Length: 101
Image (cartoon, rainbow, N blue to C red):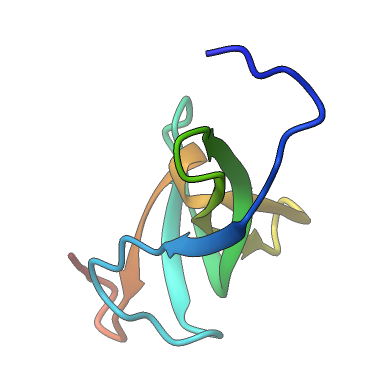
């Protein structure tokens, strides 16, 4: 839908789209594999980062809806880079060397 500007806004609703499947503590050590890679690396879980905003306007109610979408952020020291969770496969690292899903 194309809105004509300016628009009237009576209310703004902001929501977080935090699809939390499992709570992971910041600083947790991970096993990480890049999507196009074959090698595993150690990573450090840095938390969630906002990656996208979806903004809609309801012309009937004049409500502006803002949905913040997040993704996990992981630092891989060997590569000196950070990756979002949707750009790699990752699991928590356990001391016995195996991951848990």
